Length: 228
Image 1 (cartoon, rainbow, N blue to C red):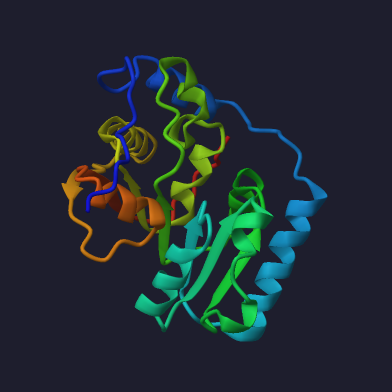
Image 2 (image 1 turned 60 degrees about the horizontal axis):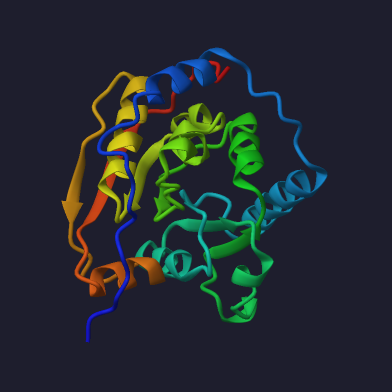
């Protein structure tokens, strides 16, 4: 039986007309939001655990990991990597007993707005970086709430590695692609794809509802420009 999930509806029919203006503002203006003590501690503790468990393993970040299903799947797909799944919801992350998680996985409760910047400050390089089915904020007036239009976005490509964003809303992935191209000066292709082995509960629900899924996958160099 098919699921009954719906594709986000919006009056927006293409890349938002203000996306370029917003990105240029973020790229040229410093993002001065202070780090919260909680996020700084969460960051320091998570990388202390990584040092104890897998000092030399390549690093995968599963951003906005939700209940952690995708993080567990990635840890099993890449057993020679160390996976950090980050979400700000304690309730979502608390569904699993840490003793039953793969040994190369750490689930961290933190706000990614700080966590991404703290990683950059520490000159951490990622092997792979996933942003799977983020909240699309489909209303035209909600552009600034989408990750690719947020002031933190210029920090993201500077973490390097293979960056992949997935969504069931084609405009979100098209905008993500356009934003990456603007910041990096290189192509960021996007495409429709199939998910025979869904990574997240949302991906499974969207696939089973017969929806088309979209992704943008880009291999990034470790960019050294100042993110301000």
